[in-house]
Amino acid sequence: MVTPLLVQSATAQGEWVLLCYRVPREPSTPRIAVWRKLRRLGVVQVGDGLVALPADARTREQLEWVADDVEQAGGTAMLWTARPDSQPQERRLAAEMAAARAIEYGQVHDAAIAARMADGDRAAVAAVLRRLRGELRRVERRDFFPPPERKQAREAVRALAGWVAAGDRESESI
Image (cartoon, rainbow, N blue to C red; front, side, top):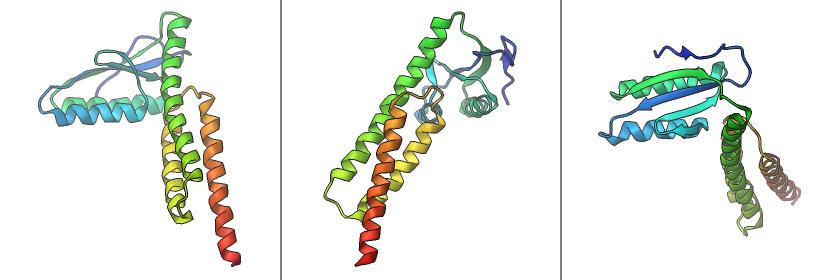
């Protein structure tokens, strides 16, 4: 287990947990696995081999697990808790994270609209709906600074669910 180095008090506002890591180039499989885990967590890339998340018990634990994976792959990893030096720096980190989530929410929104407009049968649309609900939950878990697109994606998925449910009611009445 990696021991975090505390740069600032763990109770201060505006704290971020940073993972500084290096994974060997070969074999590439562990490096790709680490990259995918970090992507699923929604980290912001601060520099080469340096990623950050807003600090709380959950994000610290998640990055500790990734750090363990890095070390098991023969790499090096250190966790840090820090605060940006200025409000503009912190806003930039938050804006980068929000922009990344906005893109993901936009994809969920567009897929929900496309499923509703497609001429597919309701069973196929219901399968798409299940997939989109799961994707929406995954995006929301890594959404620390919700952009406006979050509401739009939720509404599009909700509308698709209503459309599927209305079709189910129609088929039951036949």
